[in-house]
Amino acid sequence: MRVRLVLKRWIRSPVFIIAFALFTFVRAYSSRHVLWTWVYVPVKMIYTHVQSPDVIWEKAAPAEEGFDENRLEILGRNLESRHTDAFLVVRGGRIIYEWYALQTGANDEHYESAMAKAVVAVPTVLVGLTDNRFSLDDPLSKYAPELKNDPLRSQIRIRDLLFHQSGLDDVDFNQAKQGKVDGWKKAYYEHREKRFEYALFQVPMLFQPGTRGQYSGIGYYALAYAVTKALQGAPESDIKTLFSKRIMEPLGIPKTDWSLSYGESYEFAGLKLYAFGSGADLSARAVARIGELVLERGQWHGQRIFDARWLDDVLGRVEIGDPKHVSNHHGFILNRNGRYASLPLDAFFGEGGSHNVVLVVPSLDLVVVRNGESLADPGEGYEDALEIHLFRPIIESIVGAGSRPARWGASEEG
Figure 1 (tube, rainbow, N blue to C red):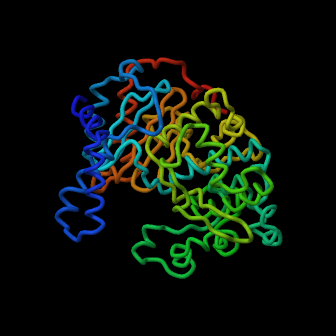
Figure 2: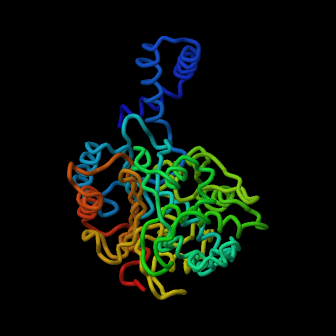
Figure 3: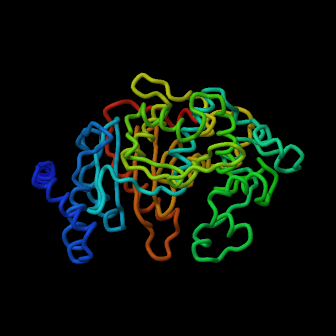
């Protein structure tokens, strides 16, 4: 801790600022690889690691929030050994554990892959629902009238896209990266600007919408199109503007801590479109703050950001609209079937890539963020690795009550 404080004071000194500027200048005009490797990179790494956080948060000792500090430290060391870049634990609205790998820091954005569905798409949809811009039971064809005469696509509803029960096929990006896909899947992967059109009109349908669940990241491109079409005429008429003005600014998250849609926008059918189910980069603190917003059911420091009743529908806690819930992937992955034995049934989480995770447990007043590469040992399954190396040990680290009552819990399940 003392070393960290010394480093913080040092990087704020005029000597450091001048030296850093000099190294940047030399790098720009010099081809000396040794200087870049052994001077500039280490200095930049130290600066990144110790700079003051942009997203302000109160801290507390683990014991103050009912955690066993030794168990939490053991978990932290284990995650460090498993290629973790960031690990953050929040209980009682306070950070009780925060760790970053040397090459990263509190303000570093991390590519979240499909976790964007939970931390970008879901909050955006909830704000749109709160504003009555659309309904979860609206047909997709309301926003893409060309689909009205399609026997299957005409049955797709907004909730089917959000809940991965649309019937739309998908593309395995890991396979695509290795050149193992062809045809429309290859074109979809290689041309991000065409993904909205493909999602709406060209991707094959595998089953009748709403009859079963099957993951489709492609469905979130159709969803982003429908949401954007519904926003026309609103003060925030595109996804990025709405996400910035209505979610990130009220949460105190500066633009330096997030980006979305691969840093791009796309023009299609006269609309300015953004991907919101993938392509997002956020700092760990930004992700945790969004997790806290969901934990607080859309209320943040006296401001209502979204209506809690829509959150209940998204989380399958009440039977609004279609009584059938055929999927447990609602942007957030729900644990209501007890798939993850260590977690309470009210727990839910967003995940993407190689075990980037935001876990929210209302009955424990808990938010956990982990970014990094795969947690799995050789031969270990993706879901098993989550349970063994993150979920179980974090729950086993809790030995007492937190400082405030549970926000809402498993006993309230609808």
